Every structure is written in structure tokens, then in C-alpha cells.
Image 1 (cartoon, protein in one colour):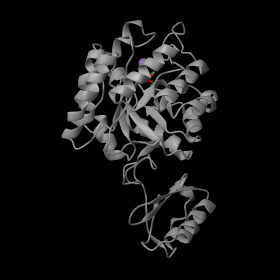
Image 2 (cartoon, protein in one colour):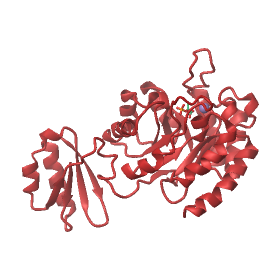
Image 3 (tube, rainbow, N blue to C red):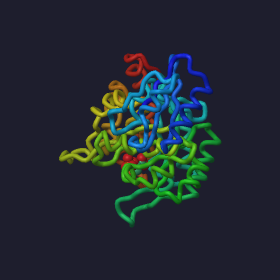
Image 4 (cartoon, rainbow, N blue to C red):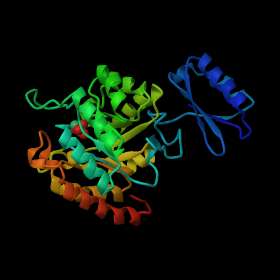
Length: 337
Ligand code: PEP
Ligand code: MN
């Protein structure tokens, strides 16, 4: 439920309204727009005594949010959310490129990668320290050692770091090292994990589940926001279809739909979305053209030697070329890179 306050509402009025809602057993989220202040009543709406709220002199109207996702929806917040990471903005007019190897493999590999990304004009370093692998016999990541190497690469280049957190017990550790916590595809509906990352202050990159619908993705984001963390970035990374030529089918349809349905930033991962390095460049351009706020791209100093996802990783040279080629695409839609 959204409670719209009258134009002249003061801080004191807002407090009065939020306290009344809280007394009824719901949580609140205040959104201050240029014109008006909105109070969202979050939780079991059957507890809300609508008549009592409407009777408050400072309340202009009470509007139900028709969508199942509330905090996430455009109905609740009209302006785009801009997630700030170390002075960088995700979701503004300026596009953001996250790049790096699938997994952190060694000090040399991650530092090399970070230097290349920085030099080419990338903004955020990615790299898995905890890897969700299909086979238990595959390389599972370097764990905390990998997080330490990411922190070293950040210190050297100034690039903020995004890395995956696979379960609730890892949250405090990963949150200590990483600027952005990544919830991977396989965990998009791990509700305990969503709640746990909702309780920390780090922004969260939420990747779309392998077969998740738009509603399921947005409800997963709602779990995080309902715990108080509103710094959520959504990521389209391909879905399972009958098409076996590519690893997944990159569903770019969802980008403009997400931009309509939610105020959260949306990025696209064409590496996992296609599974083929030669498709990363064209699909990155397509993603930007259709309104994505940024990209997540796998890049390895030497893809043939990668422990995972070498076949979808760009070389340093092709990554540098990609950034250059994305600039005119960004400009053509009035955005910057
Ligand atoms: C990744 O980005 O490292 C990853 C494992 O991606 P996804 O969760 O999209 O498969
Ligand atoms: Mn990967």
C-alpha cells in the first residue's frame, strides 16, 4: 500500500504516519520525491486499517500496489534507483562495465585482469572466489584466498569488486572483502540467502535464475529489499531454452520490460547468456541498445588456460576493442560509457 502525503508534509507528519502504520504491525519505507513524500506500508496488508490512515489530515490518498512486488515496482518509486559503489553510479546515464575472469585463479591472473580492465575503461572487477560448479570434481574456487587477491587487485587499480556469495554463512566474510555481493543464478530463489544479503549494507547483484520468470526475479529482489537493503542491481544472464547452439538464450526482451516494471538498475551478462566468446561483442551492443544500464563480461588474460568458462571469455585485446565499439552505441541512445 502506498500512502501519499500532502505537499506540505513535514518530518513530524511523516513520523506520525509511519508510527501509526508500525503500530498496526507493518513496516514502512519512506520515499521522498521532488513534489511529495510517499510512505510504503510493507507486510501483511490485511493488518492495515485503511480508514484510520485515510482519516489522518496529512494523508492525501491511499493507493494499493496492484503488483505482487511492491518495493521493487515502478508504482512504488517512479525515479530510477542509482546504486552507488565507491563513488561509481550504477543506473545513471553513464553505463557501467563489470569485467574479469570467471574465477580468481592466481595473484598474477587477477592483477593482470584488473590492470587490463582499468586501462580499457572498465569500471568494476569481477571474479569468483566461491564457484557454483555443475560437477563437484571441478575447480570450486580459491575461497578466502581468492577474496584476498581481489582486495589486492582493488588496492592496486582502485576498481571496486563484485564476487559471488553462495550461502548464508559466507555473507559476513564476502561482505568484508567485496563491494558488491553477487547472488548467482542457481541461488536466485535461495530465500534464506536473499534475506541474509538483505541485511547487509553492500549492494547486491541479483542474477536471473536459469528458468526464472520476470515475476520470480522481481519477487527475489523484493526479498532483499524487504529486509532493508534497497541497493539491488538486476542481471539478465540467459535462460534455458530448446536452443542448444548457445549455452543459454540471452533474453534481451526482459531488459525494457524490467525498466518499465521496476526502478532498479538492470545489467546484462552476455558471457553466460551465450557461452561463446564470439557472441559477447554483438550481444553487448544489443544489450546497451535496448536499455541496459551496464554489462558483466568475462575476460581472461589467457582464455585457453582458464579453469572455467574459457570458451566464453574475451581476451584482453577483444575486451579493449569491445569498450571502444560500445561508445558509439551508447552515444546513439544518449548515454555515455
Ligand atoms: C558467474 O557470474 O560467475 C556465474 C557463475 O554466473 P551465473 O550465476 O549467471 O551462472
Ligand atoms: Mn563463469
